[in-house]
Image 1 (cartoon, rainbow, N blue to C red):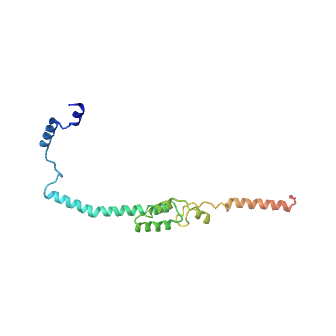
Image 2: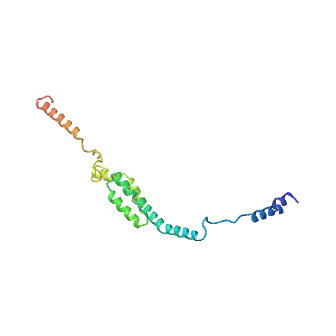
Length: 163
């Protein structure tokens, strides 16, 4: 025989005999540690757990995940939190298809809202929320300083100090 035929002939009598001895001496395999009535009782219990507990846990997790954007919007004092809440409810009825939009909306900065109202947090969400000052309105201290300076300039102009 050539080397090529030896490599092809892998099922030698010694290997076949060794495999037969291994098969004959193998012990019987058990699918469960329970037997008889105990196995039936355990199977019934597992079936009830799967039929009752798994759907309840699944629905609860689904609901908790779908209200996350609403919770995030309230935490961040988003001015459109109620609209995000409505989108989360709609997402529950549409099988979660709108949920990514609600998630993105909850994390977005309300730029147009800030341009319209001068702040990017809602008025009624949190009393402790700090409002960003509007850039077009001067601060109260600055306004008082300007009034004092104007009064001083008017006093100078009345005395003829300005030409």
